[in-house]
Image (tube, rainbow, N blue to C red):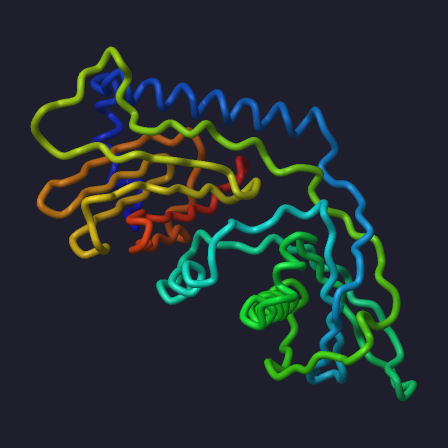
Length: 290
């Protein structure tokens, strides 16, 4: 990933950008403005009451830990991909795939033997939960992500070995949780950035289809269609604080996009999805005050 300083000379040539790039910039600015207005026009969070699903038992250095895997229709579902596609994405360390989940606060409980323990409630989308019930792979994946999420959020070290409780869908009581009220508005899908009035050059690299959206207030995701490629070999990607520059092997592709949001280039990640022939890019955003 390139530091934004490496892209400063290109920024000085903003006046030379074509009509299609200027249109792209204007649409993103408009979307950014809508996001700011949305923040003030609706509450940041709402309360949900997760429904019980199943309970797993593990442990930490402090004793027994139970995780109640719950569900709610208010939580957005993950991307609708097949298990084969998901396996391929995970093998390629795909940064763009996320399973939205709500991680509840720890609560003290008593286990079946009357001994003290700690329980956590983790909620996923209800439709996705029903799909997960019929898939050992998805169940294992959700438990792993939930465990890692709890470890990160609460500075825990949980045993990766676990077992599911029989005939007990939850331990203790499932409390209400606060979640973000709505997903942020999706940035308009632009397709190719050429406008009808700006003819496509007959020679030179092709400008690929770029699709951007805000997955979370602090995470911008991008999909770049590269149908002529079978892998990432020869691709170059530079990400600055507000610019994404992509070059393809043998000059097949070139993309130079100004992003009117502050990107954390050091933490950005990219992976090539071979089946879709897309470059998936995850770009954390810097706060306004940073």
